[in-house]
Amino acid sequence: MQTLNWIDWTVLCVTLLTIVGYGTWKTRHNKSVQDYVKGGNSSKWWTIGLSVMATQASAITFLSTTGQAFSDGMGFVQFYFGLPIAMVIICLVFIPLYHRLKVYTAYEFLENRFDLKTRSLTAILFLIQRGLAAGITIFAPAIILSVVLGWNITILNILIGVLVIIYTVSGGTKAVTITQKQQMFVIFSGMFAALFIILNLIPEEISFTNALDIAGASGRMEVLDFSFDLENRYTVWSGLIGGTFLALSYFGTDQSQVQRYLSGKSIKEMQMGLLFNGLLKVPMQFFILLVGIMVFVFYQFNPVPLNFIDASTKKVLASEYAQDYINLQEQQNALFSKKKTLSIAFSKNNNSAIKQELFTLDSLEKTYRLKSKYLIKRAIDTAYANKYDKLNIELQQLSNNKKRFLEKEMELKSHYKNAAKDTETNDRDYIFISFILKYLPKGLIGLLLAVILSAAMSSTASEINALATITSIDLYGRNLTEKKDDSHMVKATKLFTLMWGVIAIIIACFANLAENLIQLVNIIGSIFYGNVLGIFLLAFFFKHIKANAVFIGALITQCIVLVGWWLDWMPYLWLNLFGCALVICITNVLQFILKNNDKTIST
Image 1 (cartoon, rainbow, N blue to C red):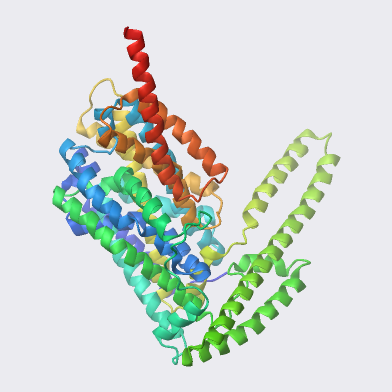
Image 2 (image 1 turned 60 degrees about the vertical axis):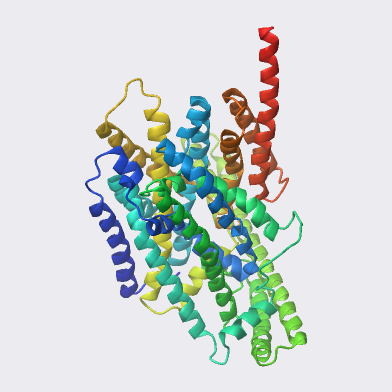
């Protein structure tokens, strides 16, 4: 576990408190729903663009994407290839429609086109998936910082959540937008500084071009994959097709994004803001992946641990598998010496034989890392199994003492919960933060931690702001028997903001790590987004479709998509296209059946 220097604490605290304080002070006079929900329609295009980017760029982006590049290379950037296409479509179709109808939420349009129950259904689908995602955006940096710094994870979850709640409740959409500009400045400054330091830590004789060649020799620079292999998550086609549908759903129908550009001064400002995001997003993700690639190159010349989670390493070294782990580490050290020598030789002579040997050594290193994860899991499982056996014997001996039996039973359940949490062996999300804490200079560590927490705050603020807006406008306000004034609705929206902030913190406290956090967020989105996008496309382009058909079709589609995800029918990105196409087909069939039934009844 690492400790922070006072300089890092100062940089971290001053950065975060400045953002929260400025956002709260600047928006303290918001009185109307127009100001609170749509930011008074005063945002310029660059503000919209940065706000849209900040909403999507959570802490997961910087922790998981860099780890993804370290482990698998640049191929993940293909995930974003469909985003510019989606931005153009949204600018041409979605924005003019939303602006003309003067809506506060995307789902108001669905009531105008269909009916209240369709509006409510899509709003509820949004609340489910975005509510889960809000918890994950808090949990992601909290769990990682808790492991590497030894901070209490529950306190971290609450701290991040409370900071976000303070300025989001106070200023609504305008506070979120204003603070996101500052957060993006902090994020870009930190990431550029990190890349600069990494390049300076690599041996002087290794140029930037040499570094890229070394990464390429290990297969890390393979950006484009034109295969049609459905088993491969990230290809040009999954990015262009699945990514386009995901981006259309996310930026066109997800209120956390729609609310960002609905705050624009005019249609032109909204459109330019989204196009700005479309042009900058792919290079931004490429840059973040490049930082991960440079961390990989750095570890070609510096000893790399078998596992980046120090707590897991300590557990296995205190177990009966300690010697096996030590032997594996020695093999890794011997491999590192060969790899370092070959990397220097390859930088001087780009020889195909050396390149092949580097690739082989990298594959061998991946095998060692997999073996280390297996040993860690065995060590933790064994430790908990021994404790479980002991607890079970005590339970049997206490069968006549009901009170003590119940106490021991609770201890056993808690033991199971801790076992599930401590079995975490996948260290991808820990690679970048581990590098930051061990190798970056004082002050910059505090700045990079501020980057991670700022990103968590920016995306979480957008999410709870959108969740509160949907709850207030689409559910609460729409179902009131009598219309309430602006003051009442602003107070209600603030209360819903507080409610969703607390719910996000609770979800964060009960969340569990997935294989890769950035994938987890995208998986949750892909389960719901395709269906919601299909509903909007039916509203835009299928004028003969009526409310009952689309409502029933959406319910059936969501059930099928959930089953498809559970049974792993396809890579998750394709669920966006699948859900969208499915709801359109089912709804058209239902409309045909319902129309014929109506004709039969009328005759």
